[in-house]
Amino acid sequence: MREYLMEATSPGLSPRQLRDRIQNDRSREMKYRRAIVGVSLIGMASMACVTLFQTGIVKRLPDPPTRRPRFDTEKVNSSEEAYSYGMPDGPLTLGMHAANLTLAAAGPPERYKDRPWLPVLATVSSGAQAAVAAKYLFYQMPYVDKAWCPYCVVDTLTHFATFALTLPETVRAVSGR
Image (cartoon, rainbow, N blue to C red):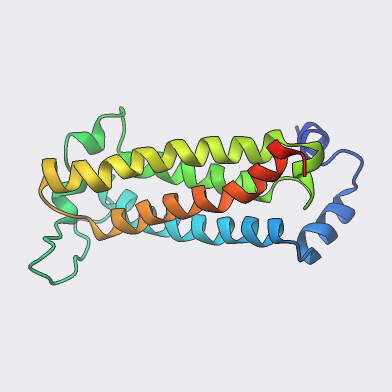
């Protein structure tokens, strides 16, 4: 498996060469990819809290003490929608952030030249996630739940940011620049 992944993402490089290039490259593409890693970890932290609640490990998560907007993490994350995937949506979302992080970390800095499928896959995947997150933010919470989850709002913003951060590299990959 390890050899297959190395060949698929970083052909011709040794692990040492790949490490040095990923850690030391200062290109715009690597800065965006590092930002995706950071943003994904923030999304994972927020969804880790939700997952603890949804799976019954913790019984309550704190909400900001505001009247407007009305925050009710329990209502939002205990809704039928939140369990409509055959499991709570928190762990599923954690997996999506892990996929974003993995795609951002895969391959050398100039992967857009000889492995354009990596940035394109990152954009397609994160774009689909951002679309689902938008549905939750702009429809599910305000109109169906009539309550907001601050952890979910943070999560949605991280999905939007991840999608935006994938676009410059994908444009280079598709345009051949």
